[in-house]
Length: 287
Image 1: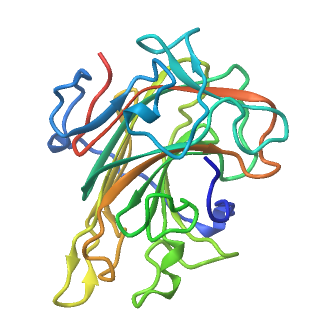
Image 2 (image 1 turned 60 degrees about the vertical axis):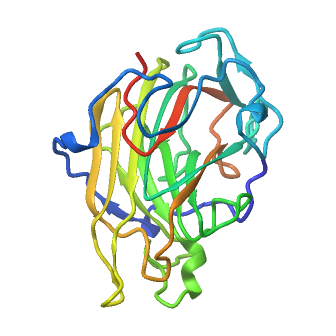
């Protein structure tokens, strides 16, 4: 899948840096075994074969399933970059629609190749996104009414949001001012987490903020969480994702679209994804 809209290339100054506030929150659920009967599960994907279109994925038609060292099952999807490239050469980006929801949760396993290198900047690579009902099923992630990001950056887990398309909306942008044509807020783990070539479990949760329609303003009660191998590493309870311009906004689309901006790929390298699942409750690690 080609990335539609201009790639999300921004400096660290564009974002509002937020230090995660970590605490125990049992209401979001604990680790549970993955399986078909998980309450609130929209879909799960084990990447055991390349027939992704037959399982509801779209906007991509080239997939390499590696059977060499999957996290579980028979295979995992491989994304490999050759030198000086932006898009992976082994597998295409893909999307999947989900039931519209104000709370979305993601779980996947990832393994980086030996000697994995970062971009040398405070951004990239991009990896996974959620889009909302305010955009079409083929809309690009770079300039939307709300795009969520789940990705490793410089070894840390990053959760982020942009809403570039709202620059002309009545209440304007919620994810910071445009600088160089881009905006966004990011929320990074405090520690470097991605520093080896082993399988690791990443989980994320996003909940849209509520709206005070009577007073025509958003409430600062949006929530996000990030877990790494079951440990809570990112947490915020005061996020504004949307304004009163979008009272019907819900998450309804997941994107797996790995991408390095031009000139940001350090060398040829690969990562693998396995046992991915999306729901409206925390899914937990695969058992």
